Amino acid sequence: MNKVLMSGNFIICEAAIRAGCRFYGGYPITPQNELTEYMAEHMRKAEGGIFIQSESEIAAINMIAGASAAGLRAMTSSSSPGISLKQEGISSMAACELPGVVVNIMRGGPGLGNIRPSQGDYFQATRGGGHGDYRTIVLAPATCQELADLTMAAFDLADKYRNPVMILADGMMGQMMEPVTFKKPKPRIYNKKFMLQGAGTGKSKFIHGLILDPIDMEEHNWKLARKYEVISKKEPRHEEYNINNAKMIIVAYGTAARIAKGAIKRLQNNGMNIGLFRPVTLWPFPEQQLRSLSAKVKNYLVFEMSTGQMLEDVRLALQGYADIRFHGRPGGAVPTPAELANVIARVYERTVK
Amino acid sequence: MAKIVYQRPKSLKEAIFHYCPGCGHSIVHRIIAEVIDELGIRGITIGVPPAGCAVLAYNYFDVDMIEAPHGRGPAMASAIKRSLPDRVVFSYQGDGDLAAIGIAESFHAANRGENITIIFINNAVYGMTGGQMAPTTMLEQKTTTSPLGRNNKLDGYPVKVSEIFSQLQGVTYLERCMVNSPANVNKTKKAIKKAFQCQINGHGFSLIEILSPCPTNWKMNAVNSCKWIDEVMSKVFPPGVFKDNIPVTAKTAEVAK
Image (tube, rainbow over all chains, first blue to last red; front, side, top):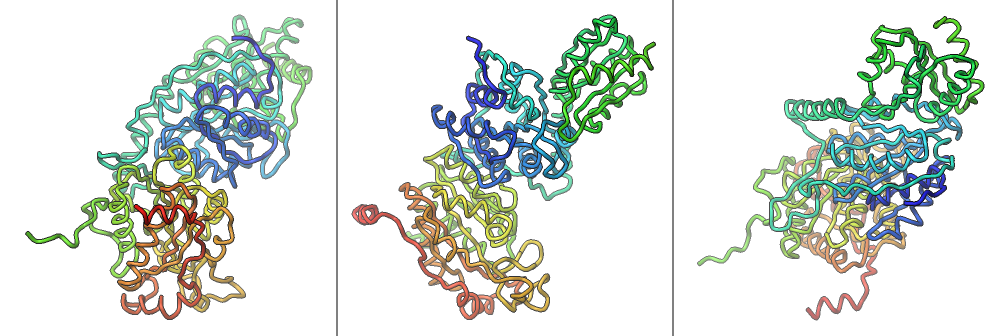
């Protein structure tokens, strides 16, 4: 497969269509409009592909639920305020165990905020986001190649666990252009018995999240919890960079991790040994993997484009075994690698030496 | 051998309705099931029940069903129908579900001309939650959230769904019926059958609004509830065919069969 130069939002679409996504519903919101526009053009060209510009984010997520129940691979996308609206549907899909992919190209918040890249939706994404006791799998790409690979993986994971999967990127990732190679997608594995296609001559079935009996509802909650436990054991993904001989480790994801990598390279030339731990799955958070590093490295700096959300997961993972500092740029401000390098150098001087 | 003239429709499960005595839901459930039987579409029908009294409709209909969050039925039904165009997809909704929280989903599914059928139960009240004011509550009607009667200055006016939706170009068939007498039940059944047939023939969006009694929340007995539909409700919501854009050629073809 040849390398092509594409921007992030387009890459997600192209990967989704190649992965067999045949339903897209979405509503315009910046900075992810290219995604909806690409789908409008290309989804309807794909065999059996359905595109609906929905009347709202809420309608879009419920369309995804419907198409998913009918047996199609389905996706919707939005940006932060729109994702808040989708939470009702995401909770409902988790309850009904319907697979589906939701893309969040994060922007500055809270409220309408602005349209600059941000990472303020970490809590919402990793803690379920909607009401009730559930989780969504959250993937955080940091390169355009990863946007393609993780989009394909998102569909596989959604089917495997019959659960919504979120791709959590930001305006920077969505607008960025990089060369990308689309890999061959894996064939879909999804049991027809989970699809709702009419009873035929057999027994009718119903898909529902309403379970009025509290004992039955409790059992359903525990059933979901067992599923989430399996996901937590099997699916954490992360990247380590420059970990050997590192005296300090930066923990960052997505765009923030890219900036951190640039900063680390600069500081290497100044003789500072700094590593990067980049969670690729934000839920499940790779906590065991991070904890095992604390046997060797005792100094950590969490960097996020927020006021500190993943920071809590890092604290939980490290359980007091290490010193944890934080640096954040919320609200759509994106630091340069040089700026971050200065911050890291200061923390390094104070803690490591 | 005696000829069977009346029996439980095959598309209705052997379950006892949880609906209150005198409620219109059970009548409408039954006639939908009869229509599904008569059209022979049980195996290809997918229903979308709402949040509201009919939330447990999947306990009664013996067809594939998927629950929609409150008001979102038409969005879900649109996607199911587009994904499986040869299935018969209907959304079953109450007045709060369709005309309040789900007005956008309903309006736009109609406007897109989705080839689905909406069965809309208008009983002028939120039934399941205990009788609060609905978008279709009559002026002066007392409910738990309009204890002195619906006041147009403070609470607005009853929403006339059929009148509004008939203005949308995407709508093919739209009729308002009542289930307060045997004759009206028969009329309603014919309307539902016509709507399903409209969908089967690929003619597009159909909606049947049904004025339906809710004795419990109207604080009336069943007989007076039926009278109230005639004397009060149907004056604000007159029954009739509001739109019939089913192509004439298709209609004659039906007759020829």
